Amino acid sequence: MLIAQITDLHVRPRGLPAYRVSETNRMVARAVAHLLALDPRPDLVLISGDLTDCGLAEEYEELRGLVARLPMPVYVVPGNHDRRETLREVLPAAWMPGATGNFVQYTVEDHPVRLIALDTLVAGASHGALCTERLGFLERALATGDGRPTLVFLHHPPFACGLIHMDEIRLLDGEAAFRRLIAGQTCIERILCGHHHRPIVTRYAGTIAQIAPSVTHQVAFDLTPEHEGALVFEPPAYLLHRFTPETGIVSHMVYVETFDGPYPFVLDAAYPGQH
Image (cartoon, rainbow, N blue to C red; front, side, top):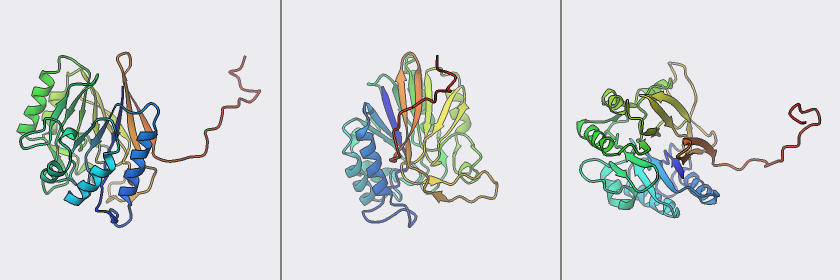
């Protein structure tokens, strides 16, 4: 099974860039075309938040048109740049199946890997939170999984990574309770996040937490405490998670770019591995 994770699309109204310089709609279209060209194609696509830049209805209309080209199931969660109410009004219900109540949260049971979607959006803020209601949903979802391999996906990462300006707006409220719920759940193959616009991975509560790079612009890599953050045009990329019962999840980072090659490996006569 192949699961593509794209994130931080920041779709804008047609003709407008994000942050005055990032042509996000064009880059999302390229990412969709790249997914369609994969052989084999992904079985499903996860979009881990910041679907749009300002949560405007016209941005969600643009997003729907761009992503609707994908023939496989698509599942979304909101990020801090999204607005729940508008997202629900404009996007297909099939992209958030069974999401009712106050938050865009749901489980997907009909794939070899079980999916738990969590909503970490705090209206009017950049950081993430999991309140009692959202944590209760996660607790119930974990209790009913029968040990099946599970992916938990959300927008805000629950861990600090050293990018100070991003760590200040990660999952803050409810993180300790989230960690306790995850700990000891051997069924959880990955915790998949967005938000940071960089490929980052760590051990977390006995499993692996992983942040996908953006399919648009990236966040500049700078671990100095005084860095205030900036975007850079490092290559757009996404994660492709391959699941088999024998290996569990194995994750690949895939660039949305065209590079020179491929060239065959022509071994020099002096190569020591030749017999």
